[in-house]
Length: 200
Image 1 (cartoon, one colour):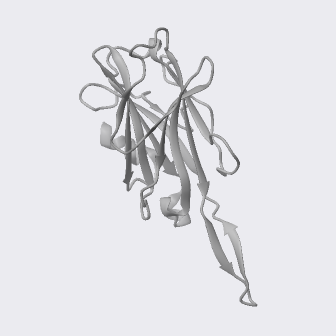
Image 2 (cartoon, rainbow, N blue to C red):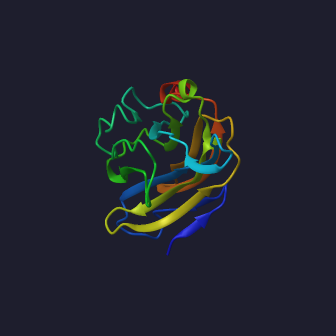
């Protein structure tokens, strides 16, 4: 049974769940619908064309990127150890279900990686003058990759207007087990490399 989390809530993922090593992190969002005025004054609804990109940052005990290949994103879809694999870029965010997914094999995560931070950026946010106020129904969820059963879900419901990045949540080690932390913080980072630079 899936558990819905609130911001700041932490939950065990692997404790008491023998054999759970392969996870799928699903992220979803929809472009907000805005009212467009026509020449005749009639309003018509149109969804903003916003391209969001999910990424994962593999961090060590000091909160730094464990290596140069520890940023998994649209241009580097796989970690060097093959423990974190990005499903690929979804440009529109339209439709039901996850817009992007990141597979994580906990058994392959290197010992020096303590946290896997999952973030979302808006592609070319500054050039397009876009921010997360133009996105609705954003969420992050964690599934058992073996049977695609949803374990936890966190709906990001805060007002993120003016923000160009979302730090959605993180998986982290604690006493030999893996937990999930629902973060839900907005940030100013119009490109994933700018956000990743904070962890170098």
